[in-house]
Length: 289
Ligand SMILES: [Zn+2]
Image 1 (cartoon, protein in one colour):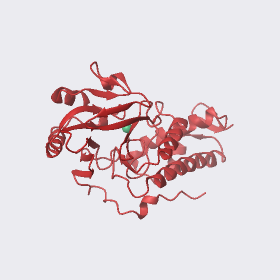
Image 2 (cartoon, rainbow, N blue to C red):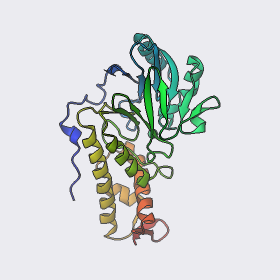
Image 3 (cartoon, rainbow, N blue to C red):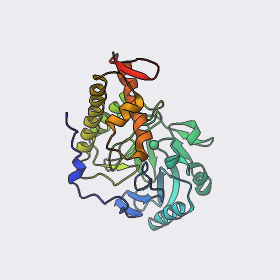
Image 4 (cartoon, rainbow, N blue to C red):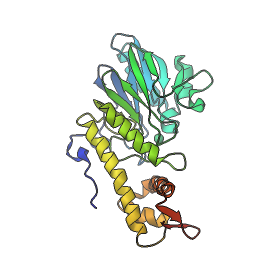
């Protein structure tokens, strides 16, 4: 079984580290890149300002890290749009997306909206799948996309673009965290966004995907199936520890992202175990059922 081909290999995407700090992606959307690059966050966290031109308002999606330089860049982007921040939306609870939500809520006098109460805070709004938010002269549809985390949301814009947080990344593939994440839910969420027919995917990390977003979602689904096949093939040779499986299946990934690979591996093993295809063997090893 050969690895599925990532359609983005043929696209003209900016090289890692070469994304502009601030970019207007379409009339509704300005992206501001936070200064927190790493192996896990790629170029850094993408913060999105969404609002109808001339409305004088924007919604901030995924404020990101509570960083003074990032705040200044977001405020400058809002000013350039002639807009004030009227709400902060958060895709999921991870700190690289949510940390600034509470301090910026206080600074802007704007409420936070998220799926979880811990992120939304005492004055915030809890979001659920199917909610339609009329904000900043436009509408955003809330699409529950659990998998990476249990609380993960995406936001579909009037333009047809979808803000996908960590559900889909601009480069490479995302992580199904363990034990919070869920591979079955993640696959269903990939199909869900696929079936929206997104005009573009605006990712939590890495470049925006505009050329053929559906092809990226097809690749993500194929990639998950490939990883599952690799695990089953490795276990066909005998019981293995999770560490041995990660070393085999993720031999090519940098050491920095091995812990994340371990989480995705554990999440996939949990799915296979629930399906009765894999079972615990001795203490620390698993085997085919
Ligand atoms: Zn995340």
